[in-house]
Length: 192
Image (cartoon, rainbow, N blue to C red):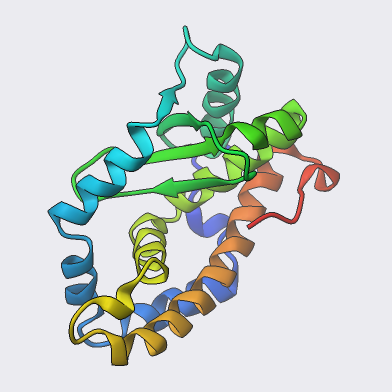
């Protein structure tokens, strides 16, 4: 994986839909407005404030899984947090000017084998390696109530459709990243 570039495993639909998103006039401005300092801080506090930071000393096995996956994908390991939650899930947040981080729910850790968990971490790393983070965060904010933002309600439906089309394509790329790390297609569960 020495010298592995994101485009080495990026799915063609991901490339195509990313270009389409970038071509939407004013989308970056809307994104900056939605991802302003207040919403960013709320998202950080909501996630980090109720989670445990994984390190060499705290949950070292998870730390090792993340570090190994990052090395294989030739990318920097983000902060990894474990959050108490009964709904199995993992997600990545990349917020302007802040170190990106991955959150994994405790129920997912309890549910998966070590290799399956590494596949999930590699999938999340794929989002960061391919610079999906900002679009991913944007999509999450849109689904959390962009219809209530003044002046955005009319455009939100169109944006949601474009973002979800992109998101489905991005997930294919990230499943490829997971496969590169675990080298076993049986370990890739259909999660999203």
